[in-house]
Length: 152
Image (cartoon, rainbow, N blue to C red; front, top):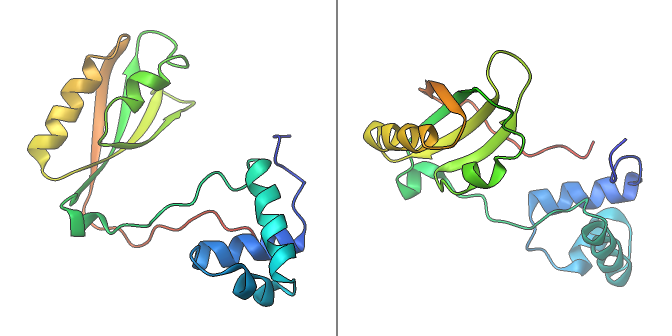
């Protein structure tokens, strides 16, 4: 059981859902939506942040609007355990996510670039990571949807 599992109640879940819908709303509006005062809502959100349930507040940007039209998922093969290589993957800014996985590959990364030529450059940089022995890229033609983790 992870550190944050099992420690959120229904009110916390409702607060999280409201924040995911609009993280810019005032605590008064947030509280009203879940049946709390502004002060109580603020305190609960503070505790959710403190406990790591809410990891960060960010902006959801349309990748195409900023010229990141190419989305690819890359399976990375390796000759060594890649569990200590997080920093090497994080150093490649086009990588949005990196996951150690079970199966034939070692790591799965989600990459967004402006062109396939830039994707090729990312693959080249992946090969420069110690232990990487191969990649298999799958380019997405269309994204039906992407959504945040639901608190429900």
